[in-house]
Length: 86
Image 1: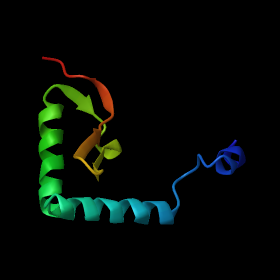
Image 2: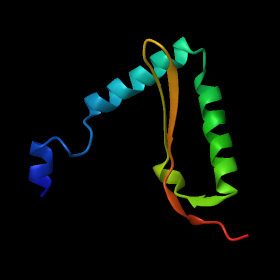
Image 3: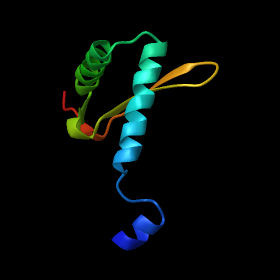
Image 4: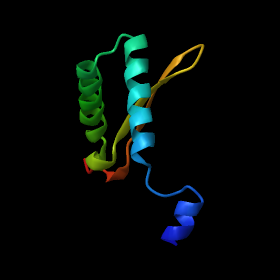
């Protein structure tokens, strides 16, 4: 199955893809005037607030900032493990 995934391009991202994504993130952060420190603060704050309501997988969190001609978009992919007990 691993070979099939590699042939179909569904395997792990290559170092080239990772570098390209990082560069894209840096460029978008620069365009919207958001420093890496502020991006990390935003991520920490999102984790803190969401953790009040649901249990999350902190290692699986992905936050991205993208931009097209008309708008910038912040996307957070946060794996939810379960609901918090009150």
